[in-house]
Length: 154
Image 1 (cartoon, rainbow, N blue to C red):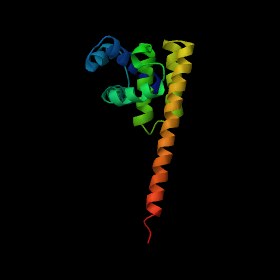
Image 2 (image 1 turned 120 degrees about the horizontal axis):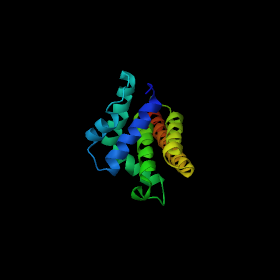
Image 3 (image 1 turned 135 degrees about the vertical axis):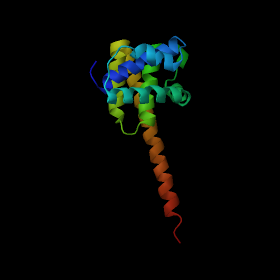
Image 4 (image 1 turned 60 degrees about the vertical axis):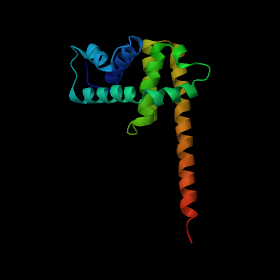
């Protein structure tokens, strides 16, 4: 398998899916999916970051997804879609070096490949709303900071 973030994301999805649906410990799912696959150092590093990062931040990520996917409780979402959303949400929320558009595009491609065309639209909608909410939060934070710093002059 080639070294790339796309390949790492596909493997990460498989690992997260196996841990989620199979109720398998994350270490076991990681080993099960990657066993026998040759990956270069950078791909392994990125794979571990997104898998273990997504898993450790799952509660916060799930809350964000639930808030944005109105009418679709997490347990009602297709398991593939749910784990694609978790993976991309981790990148959007906790990996500032990765552009939002890259995370969303990769998630949509994963949804089209492993789920359905409708899933691609659903994933795109939820993640787009997440980015818009983050941008709004950041704007209000920077507005508050500039108001408090400009109001302290004497």
